[in-house]
Structures are given as C-alpha cells and as structure tokens.
Image 1 (cartoon, rainbow, N blue to C red):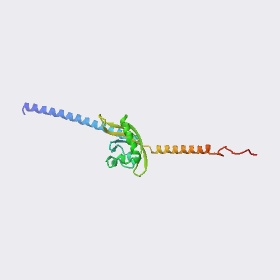
Image 2 (spheres, rainbow, N blue to C red; image 1 turned 135 degrees about the horizontal axis):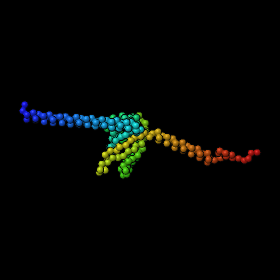
Image 3 (tube, rainbow, N blue to C red; image 1 turned 120 degrees about the horizontal axis):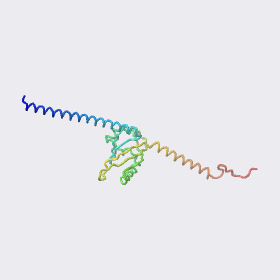
Image 4 (cartoon, rainbow, N blue to C red; image 1 turned 120 degrees about the vertical axis):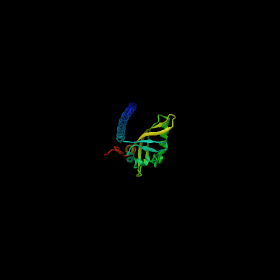
Length: 196
C-alpha cells in the first residue's frame, strides 16, 4: 500500500471516528431529552390526577379534548367518546342554561378573557349535575379564538346544600310570620280577661 493511500485511509478513519463520537453524543443527548420528557409527562399526569376537577381544552364549535379520565366520573361518558368528536359539550348542557353560558363567554372576550360559569349538564344516566367551569379564552395575536382552557368542577353538592339552606331559611321565615303575626292567642298571647 502506498503511503498516500495509507494517509487517505487514516484520514477517513479519523473522520469516521469523529462521526461515531458525534452520533454517540447525539444518542446520549436524545436519551436525556427522552428521560426529561418522560419525567415531565409523569409530573403532568400526577398533577392532573391530583386536581379535583376535569382539565379540558375546548373549541368554538363546542368540541372538547379532555386530558384525563375523570370526565367519565363527572358525565358517565368515557373521554374517548367526547375526544372523538362524536359528542360535543353543548350536547350535555341543559337547554335552559346554554344562553347564559354563551353570554359568559362573550363577556369574557370583552374583558380579560377569563370566565367562571355555572350551569347544569345532563349526564349519561339522565340525572342533572351542576358544573362550575373556570377557564381562559386563548386568542391569537389578531384576537381570533384558538381554544378555551379550563377546569370543570362538580358543583352539584354545593348547589344542593345552598338550595336546602334557602328552603330552610324560607321555612323558618314563614314559621316566624305565623307565630308573630298570626292573630289572637299566639305564644304568650293569652286573650282574655283576668281569671278569677
């Protein structure tokens, strides 16, 4: 083998060794990135499972992407049904409440784009649940809605407790009116003459 050929061969080997080192470095870097992504995903999943609500990403046409399976506990529908676009969130909202929900969204668009909405939904078994919906409308630089990001909370028990308190308060007020203003012979009212 000629010295020139040998020298070229050594140069090629050196370049290959450098390429191998670059590839090893890239592979190592890719593994680190993959591990960091995996850890980030696990942290996100842990956070989603810790939140007592259902995290969502919604769109103007009422389609919704749910990020965890808790939506099934809330609505009775698996997240895959809602995420597949076979059903829209507006399909669940009680007809009497849809106008108020839309109004709260319009109001948020005129303000800081955050909203707090409370409304009823009809769940899979036919029952009604109250939803507290907290979120933000995300727009592009020209103000066009990209999506809504938020959290649904089941507010049913709180609403029922509030209704029960109102009912109890009203009943107490009615009883008080009857006792105080109910005419003759009320409590301590004695009505008559002296005894003798």
